[in-house]
Amino acid sequence: MGLKPLHDRVVVRRIDADEKTAGGIIIPDTAKEKPFEGEVVAVGPGARNDKGERIAPELKAGDRVLFGKWSGTEVRIAGEDLLIVKESDILGVIEGVEPARKAA
Image 1 (cartoon, rainbow, N blue to C red):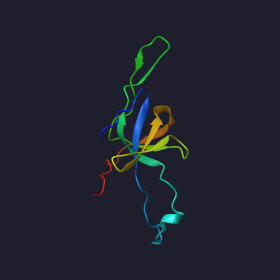
Image 2 (image 1 turned 45 degrees about the vertical axis):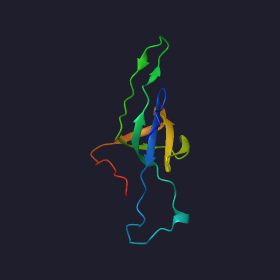
Image 3 (image 1 turned 180 degrees about the vertical axis):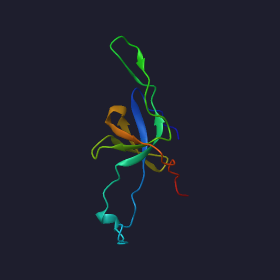
């Protein structure tokens, strides 16, 4: 991927939710909401504090994260839909889960 985020921004690939409910009902595309979960693809170098010192980001590529419904800016890079958000808009990191692999 040829996108390097600046400052405290993070590039996230949305992870699609299940297409079935727990009861086995298939959810049509028109009824699905955009997922609030994603995988971090790239992380900027970090923000700067009042003294000009860089604050290292807490996230790293491969982290599975949760973000708000209206967070970030959607972009399309090399045919892939991505989301650029500020690190502070990330609500949390999901631990103990394998990184998502993009289906071929």
